[in-house]
Length: 307
Image (cartoon, rainbow, N blue to C red; front, side):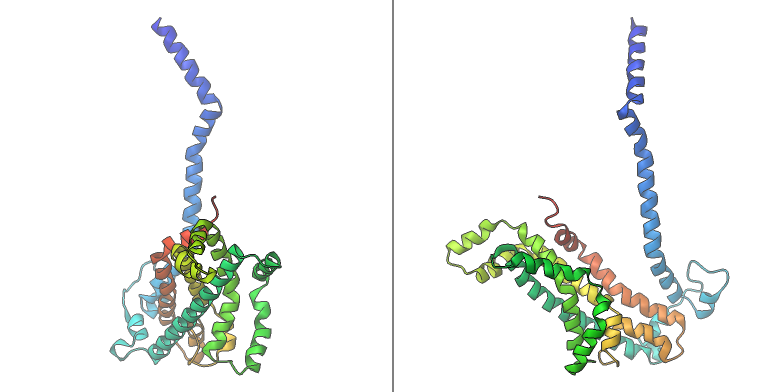
């Protein structure tokens, strides 16, 4: 009796293992392994250049030129970073230029972020809540500008700024940044505003609030994650710009860090270990910002994706 029961159990187990459920279970380890391999490849592809720049910046010029290459700094020195920050009289005049360019990047990206977010909040709220003629046409037209290659507008924008005598000014860079970042910011905030229940504003209207008052006192406090996401993305995009500020700025007074790092090797003979140190510092600012505010980025970008 017991032998017959064991035989029936074995047959059931064999049937389940040979069926769809068994095949699905057998595929799970392979699927998991494939995902792990894909993630490792993507991380290596993305992070190895940054690691190599850090590795090069922490060694001497002879150590960076050595063959075979050292995958860890050998010898480990901080000479390049002392030169960038002008510690101990080092720097070959780099520290002043680099510090000024960092300040320029903060000013230009920060101002562009503020202007972009203010306009995007008003525009996105109008598209999400108000009713007016040609609303859909205007909204689609704004988003359609995202399909236009940014560099296709480079020459027209330069001619406009030159005619207004704005070349080599903060205002020119900020205006160009805002024109490029605004459609994306509007799209992010439009999706976020659509996730906010209209009943909140209706309650404010019952109390006598105007649409602007409802936006300021009800919608914006609730939409802080979306606004934060739009602000962070605008700042990061501004920090990463190169070609537009290269064309619109001609001297250190307004050139951001991306332009200065690229120009250092052209202005004078600079060790590439020092260039790598400048690049690492320039990349660290947006990297730390993105990691610190990652929660707001995810909340703002994914808003409206799940109903």
